[in-house]
Image 1 (cartoon, rainbow, N blue to C red):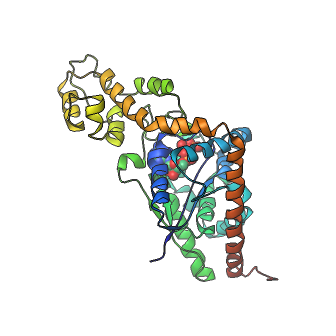
Image 2 (cartoon, helix red, strand yellow):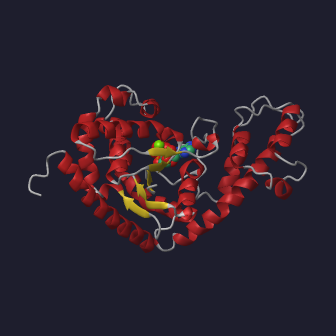
Length: 348
Ligand code: ATP
Ligand code: MG
C-alpha cells in the first residue's frame, strides 16, 4: 500500500490553544513519530488568515513565528516534517485561481463551517469574496502536495468534502491528475471540537475563549477557576449537572484513571466523581483544581520547551526558510503536471 502524504495547517491569528492541541497537533506528532508516511507538511496559513484579517496584517505577521514556537514545543520535528509559509508558495495561488472555475458561489455559501463563521464575524450582509473562497484555497493547499491524509478538527470536514468534489471535477474534465484525501479526526469526539472556556461550541482564537499552550501556570489556573459549570449548583450540597458543564467536558477529554491517585485519591475514576457531583456534596472548586492539575501536567513541559525555544528566534526563521524551500521544490514540480492537464503548458 502506498504511504500517506500528510498535510495540515493553522492560521497565524494568535497562539495555538488546547483545541488545536487535542484536535490536530497530537495526531500530527503521533503520525510523525510513527514515521510510517511518505511526506509530512505543516504550514502556516497566512494567506487564509488575511481573508478575514486583511485590515490587520500586523496581527498575522506577529503570529507567524509564534505558531512555529507552538509547533516545536509540542514536539513537531523539522527534521521529519516540512514546515512552510503559505504565502511563499505562489503555486498555491495559481491552483486556487483555476479551481475557482470548478465551484459555484451557491456551493460555497452552503459550506456549514463558512456559514457559521460568517455569522460569527458579522459578514452575513456582505462577505468578502476572498473569505467565501477560502475553502477553494484550502483545496489548493491539499492537492498541490498530493495530500492523502489531513489530521484536523471536525470543522474541517466540509473543507475535505469540498476538496474531493473539486478533485473529481478536475479529473473528469482534464484527465486523472489529482488525488482525493481523507480527514484524520481524534479518537475522542470531544477533542474533534473542544468547546471554549465559556462553554461555547468551539474553542477558537476569534472567540477569545481559549487556553493557550503558551499560558503561564497562573493564567491557566485563573482560566480554569473561571470556567462555566452548572449555574444551579450553588451550594456544595446541591445536586449538580454534568451535561453542558465545561469542567466535566474537559475532564472527559483529558482525565485518565492514573490522575486519581496523584491528584484526587478519594475517587477511583471519572464515573465515581461524576456520580458524586450529580448526587450533591462535591464543590466546583474541587473539580476545577483537579482539572487544573491534569492540564498543568500536560502543558508544563510544552510551556517550558516553548520558553527555551523563544530565546533563539533565528532558529525559528531557519526552520521556516528551509521548510519553505523544500515545499517550493515539490510545488514547482507538481505544477508542471497541473498545467499540462489544463493545456496551458505552452512552451514546455
Ligand atoms: P480562527 O479563530 O482564527 O479560525 P481557530 O482557533 O479556529 O482560529 P484554526 O487555525 O482555524 O484555529 O484551526 C487550525 C486547526 O485546529 C484545524 O485543523 C482545526 O480543525 C483545529 N481546531 C481549531 N480549534 C479547535 C477546537 N476547538 N477543537 C478541535 N480542533 C480545533
Ligand atoms: Mg478556524
